Image (tube, rainbow, N blue to C red; front, top):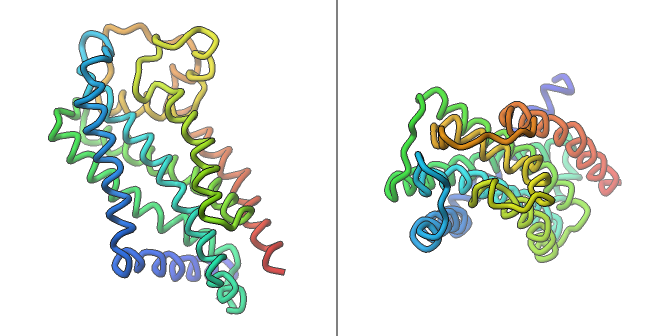
Length: 267
């Protein structure tokens, strides 16, 4: 087998191993699915009456794309936590003793976590439909929105993979990831309109990739306010393109760093 073919085959094996854990440890899947449902219900019924996204769109339609973006970003923490858990239990040492591609361990982990995000998005979409969310655009645009969410989640999972290799402790990773992820998700337009932020903070929100991901999904789902004034920032004028640029930069930077760090720890 060529090096590429061997890496792909090993990646598939590692990804399959991680997916089997869904059957063996169903509690993991329950935790993954319950959290987004709670966020949808909490913001839709508790905060929905206090936040006005503007005329032409209901808050629940405004909210659901933001919940989608938040959930896939939070879901990336499972990558780092899973790698750290495997290192603590010695499973990574077992992988190192096998004649397999070293990069396949991280690639298989990030690939399998895409399945978790697919399940989360499916449950959230059904919950959103129940509380009043509707797709106003075409089915093709909706499919593009879900694909953009998954691609962004896959990129963020490589950041968490690097963290998982650097800090092989599940507890530390969970705490450290929230310190970074919480500001990115909540200091964005995921839950409140962009106009509600003060001018100094608004610049950060406009160039926050979580904001552009949310905005791109709202446009593709048809959940935007047609009467609202658009932001002048290039990132918000081209949210899908800017999000894809961020995805490419994250993959180019963090995937090689994570693999290189894993190889160093394997020596």
